[in-house]
Image (cartoon, rainbow over all chains, first blue to last red; front, side, top):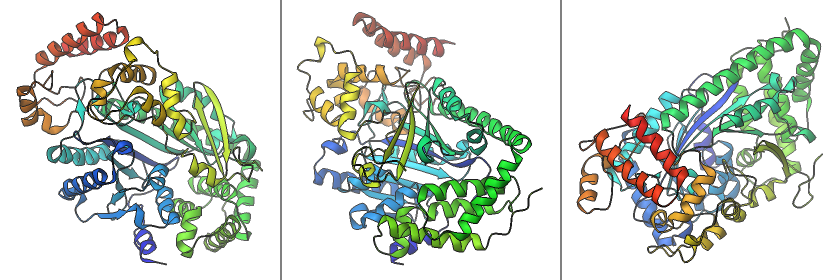
Length: 354
Length: 189
């Protein structure tokens, strides 16, 4: 493992207990300096000046003291994309690396993209759901920033962003949910349509086979103008809470109506994870999803949930390459992935069905 | 196993998104997904980076007022927005107002900011800006979760919004006018 990998892996991301259904949540604020061109139109020397000014201002913020700054251009391609897999930056940020810097705290829960499409994209991440505490922290950083830098703001449009679809609060909040029971009972379409009607965006991630219906869904706000930050977050929390209730109720239904199916699928998935020698990422995600469900339903120890979140992150393509310290092709990744999963699940106790 | 829709290789990225109530599934290989920057384009259709501008541009009502617009600070025009999907600098919001309003109208439900304002604005900066007559309304009051600075008064904000409302009605920007009216009502409560 090289120094970058050590730095990345030595800090386990989660400092808080994992909870059922919610995989993670995130709030991100987009900000720009008032007197500079937006990133897409700025020249290299402008971008360097912007980066220096932002880092200077952020370094003085108490929450961020002792943070790390990395120039994206100094990293290998798979090292950059591993940061996307850790939810520390966007995919776009890894592609346009001209004077792009990433500032992040040691616990990796706060990360700030400098010179993404906006000068600053500041995000806070949690492996559970607590918008109030998250917003307070990110808001403190934002206040500190605007006291030290002239931030682009307009009375009518709010915070000015390089794409007008982000103006106003410049805030995106998103929650990643694990919804196996809704998926088993084929309720995903209804859910995403309902979420959309409420003005939020639902996106399926890690689709399964041809029907593209995985068990993981990300819900985020679409509207950034005309609602306050608190309004957006409280609406989103309400929606998330009702989805959690649905999911938990549906799990009870699955336990009543589809118990053999459930035991069979969980049992087979664990068998696959313990015996695999080449595993594609989609298959791994689906198997791990069932292990998460098993842990939530106490067929596996409850405290395994946090480790399952970790293994889910570590078995992603770029993480495997960071671990191997070299680029791997798809076939090599599948073999490496299987190795990690086999080793981990060998230590997991046998299923205890009620 | 699905094939990448762009190059036909084995797809390793599968995404589903609902756009205008219609579910779309996309299958891609990792390389094409990275190339098209399909991640993290929240709130936007599955457009490729270069076509986001076009998609946004296509969604707005084009009017004669759009011709000949150019940002006096950075030189950005509606055409360069169409190409890149991004504005050039904060001043574009003033100089390319008809374009910005069109995009905001088609992509946002609200028309007037009601969230937080930068902290410095509530004190020294606003006074400076007001003195220089750069900022028309100066108290930085949002309708909810609002902060009121030294100069902050609901009355002042209502006055400013009223001015913006009059302008909007004069220019026949009715959707914006309605939003401003609602914002004024909220403040008067």
